[in-house]
Picture 1 (spheres, helix red, strand yellow):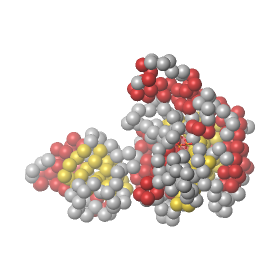
Picture 2 (cartoon, helix red, strand yellow):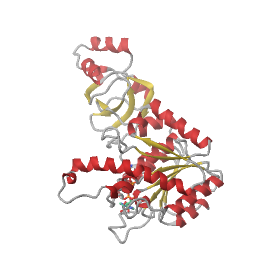
Picture 3 (spheres, helix red, strand yellow):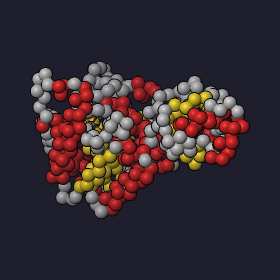
Length: 380
Ligand SMILES: Nc1ncnc2c1ncn2[C@@H]1O[C@H](COP(=O)(O)OP(=O)(O)O)[C@@H](O)[C@H]1O
Ligand SMILES: N[C@@H](CCC(=O)OP(=O)(O)O)C(=O)O
């Protein structure tokens, strides 16, 4: 970590470190990580742990019988939820054994993080725990989450937690030294990237998926996490969690892996939340020549400029403003439901359409708009 004293760090630990043999939790690699947490606290650095591994820890409780229906993809999803439920308690108990200070469990879904009220409540809880020197240990609530509600990987979850907790450093512990120019498990000539100052398509092109059977992240989700965190002013490291030297290096201000440098112009907290944490519930398509390059212009969007309304959303949900050439323009809180907006946008008579917006107000509000980059891209 950089020379200047760091005040708050989020540490993400992957499944392969928690249950390397898939036979329940093992302290084999966790002792060095626990000692790192203790040493951080001794230096006055507050620490938050995002720990994967509930599924990996619980998997051995569910031996698969050959040919059973549990081999179907649907059954596998249900089984993983049960594994997570069984493994979560074992994982928490394993961490708790290392410390002579208390730990606290926070299980989240993306549904919690994209709801502003619940997001602020989580943030408040984390701050209260830190104020009382209690180590928050967070994980996705795999047992109850659904495709619509889940973050899906703890790399991205750890970045959202780091933003919510106003951390200044995110350390993602992986089973590899850092980001290579290609997957080192597949290419013997792969080279480690020590620093990344700008995350772009070329960086994403380096990343492949996970090779482990219980991990879900792979390198792509780590880059997504680094993009979220660095845009919030958070230095993000990918380090090899299997090497004690990684943690010694961090504590002495050296970079043992890949450092994604924090943006010099971080997004304001609410804008960051809107841009990187909230998932759009629908889309509003406008013509590519519409001037949507400022929050003010977006807020002046009128119903007769709406070409199409996609998805089902309620008033208050977040939508994606996209031009008809595919460019993501902005994410914004919609003041209209998708059905009402579709009805208004379909009115042939622009004066009738305007009479609705005149009485109900703008489609989106200027204070709830986060402009996105002006290049055609898939929404992350
Ligand atoms: N460009 C890359 N650089 C490094 N690792 C990569 C890259 N592309 C794909 N990978 C794979 O991503 C894995 C790390 O992600 P993951 O499997 O989620 O592990 P963990 O759960 O320990 O974080 C590496 O072991 C490697 O197989
Ligand atoms: N919530 C899941 C996390 C899965 C996950 O992100 O795993 P990994 O890619 O090993 O960090 C679990 O506890 O198993």
